Image (cartoon, rainbow, N blue to C red; front, side, top):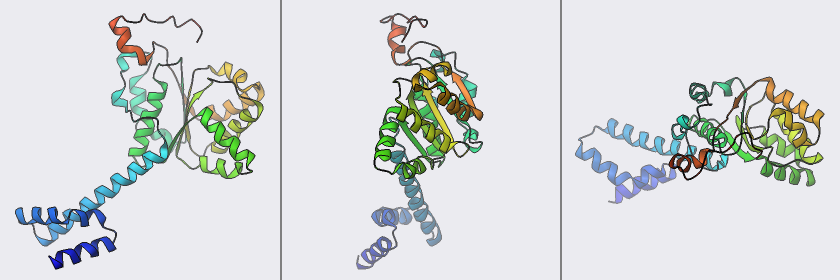
Amino acid sequence: MVELEKVRLQLLELGLSQLAIQLDSLLEKAQRENQTYLSFLSSSLEREIVIRRERKIELKFQMAHLPYRKTIADFDFSFQPSIDERLIRELSGLAFLERKENLLFLGPPGVGKTHLAVALGVEALLQGQSTYFTTLSYLLQDLKQAYEENKLDKRLSIHCRPRLFIIDEVGYLPLDKLEATLFFQLISGRYEKGSIIITSNKSFGEWGEVMGDSILATALLDRLLHHAQVINIRGNSYRLKDRIRAGVYGAPDLNSPG
């Protein structure tokens, strides 16, 4: 027992905490399976490596600030036939990240834009790619605070680091002059440096109205769309799909405003 505790302390000193915690069960397993010394060492270290990888991925998920964890497999493509399922599954291979391309999901509220953006973010994290999620409203609050504290350059630099930057809910609220300028600065800062996924309920022709400056909107879209794929989604609200199918709600008029 003294020797066992000594080994446990040595493992802790070496930073092999999970191996130290599971030492008893690992030794029992090794004895039960009549493992060789080399096999025992290999399996024990592999367990430590797996746990460290899981912890690293979990930390990346926490830093990404995803609103939830949904995958492509969770998406009901049969409910949204306007979406090219093959294209979405191809995008999940993340080749667009290597090409530093942007993705823009456009469509009315509730059709699954955020779900697909988050699902691609989840896939990026699982493949070890740095990812960050934010709504445009929260992003602009963050940038305005940095601007007021004379820390804007530093904050913009931080937002330019992730391989994938997801901005949700673009177009839901009009921007004032400062907000529009800050949004433009972020897009310009990431131009050809990393991929952006944007979800918006507005067509590109309406972005000038949203930003309050058609010239600035044109310049912003020029950078966003230079290397980009645009996915237009038209259909019923994905959130209400089960109720619509059950007849609780009628299918909405897609030509009506809102």
